[in-house]
Length: 277
Image 1 (cartoon, helix red, strand yellow):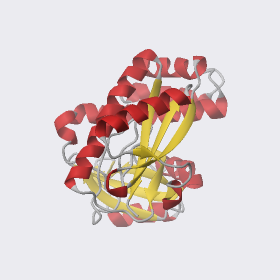
Image 2 (cartoon, rainbow, N blue to C red):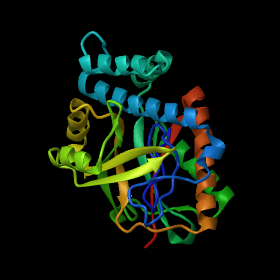
Image 3 (tube, rainbow, N blue to C red):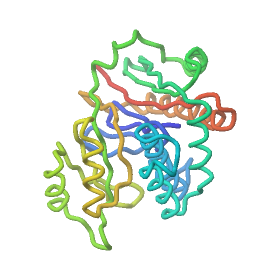
Image 4 (cartoon, one colour):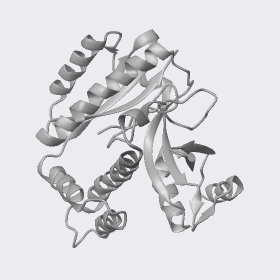
């Protein structure tokens, strides 16, 4: 289950959104130009919605437990699955997996092609298995290697990242309206971007304010598309075409491994960010 590649550097995230690339002059926008060739638009939208809700399931469980009779927040997430026409089997199976086989999140610092820095986060009950898979992928692709823990992360900062639809009650939201709402919620930055032909806003905040921002926007009637903590490169860069292709190949390998993990309950990868010193 992946995050996305984001601000270049780049990033990928847990419970997959999609891998994506940001040009240095397109702040806040994340997109691989060829993602549409590998994943249909409708499937991608459903995947993003599902993964966002799965993250909410995990958060609700951590705060209130597994019992739907006692955890109102978890019931609300279940209702969101219904409201969006997403399969309840996904909700139930994910909840069961969290209960039967809780996994630990591990973070690996990676040095990639041309000296870029990469952070990969994965959930698993077996760290050694994760490392073996990563080394296998790195050997096949070439140009990637594990770095000393902590050496890469100092070049990044954790931010709360919330994506909001630019449409509200059938009307388009202006930048001024979005900024006014964001100001009340201690948001640091608001960016308008276009993804899959739809206008969206990206709001950045301190990581410990993320839940406040998400809940505040929802209460004001905004449509929150995703909300999560992401690593952001302190000094984003633009990758060469060759390096971008190698990173895409790595993503494809991790994506395949995630699909196997979902079936065999092995482990799932979640990739974060790149930085060029």
